[in-house]
Image (tube, rainbow, N blue to C red; front, side, top):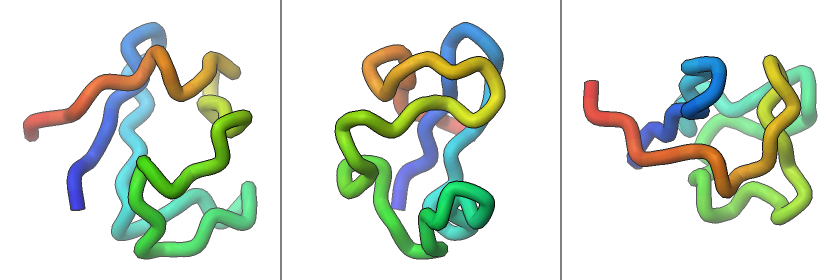
Length: 54
């Protein structure tokens, strides 16, 4: 699964890890995140994330 990075703060959403503190389980793709999900670091919405090539 692809990783996505928050453009404002550089937080990387890694589906292999998920976001346990937000009850997002490992294995949840970025597309499967709720539409109202936001960056746990800076609070912006999914629309400010782009695909991350590491």
